[in-house]
Image (cartoon, rainbow over all chains, first blue to last red; front, side, top):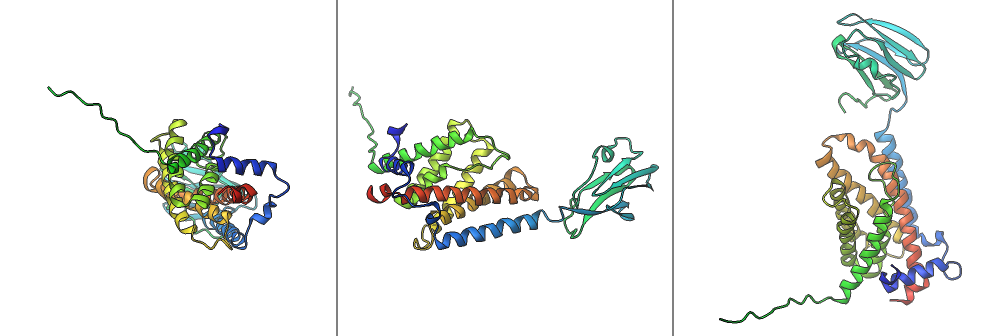
Length: 147
Length: 179
């Protein structure tokens, strides 16, 4: 393996392994422009999180029937709400920071099996009942239905 | 009946070819070693082979770096059994975009910008190319951009680390004497 390396590369590795004496410290390898690029890169990374992952914290649950809001629940306190759907009564359960469809008369129970919703923008759809449960955050222009 | 004369095709091997082949071999070895490392998310890798590409770029120029980078992708995927798998095309797309950025970044004034700048810019270009191809071809849905922050973080961290290692290698006395 070692014999296969280009001579200059092997010399570089040898010198780097020896370390210490003439090899410069890590921070000296960074020039002014490098720091600038690292700073700009960090800004890009942080803003990509805030732009793309915004609205992570949900603060309210919105229950809709046929697209019309029936009830809006704050996620601060635990409670259960029954709403009338197309097939019967759908029960929504809210606990601090999360919400779920507790029961639904629909045949396949997809929205019930989805379990707890915690992120703003997430949605449970009980299609047979025409009921949707959606979580909203402070800036809720992120919409997982249309995203 | 005329007798067949044996003809041989001579492909002259230049010193450039040998140098590129050796660098590419080192890069391929790093690719293979890296494939054994566990990854939290497909596509997030340290990209250690790029250290070699950086060293080649700064010592021998863009043409050599492009050869090493592309040989690395093709032969590296061949060795780890990923040739013409989706990951291969993603790596190729990433290599193309980062080589494009390297062609520009190499003209930055060396006085202020070192290997770290070039490495970070190339790493961002790499994820950019990969995500673009993934969006156009593999996942035709804007959902892939949901992963962008993770890839961008990895690009910044690994780009900076690889750049530091390359700068460290290039700053050693051997780099300045063995020209």
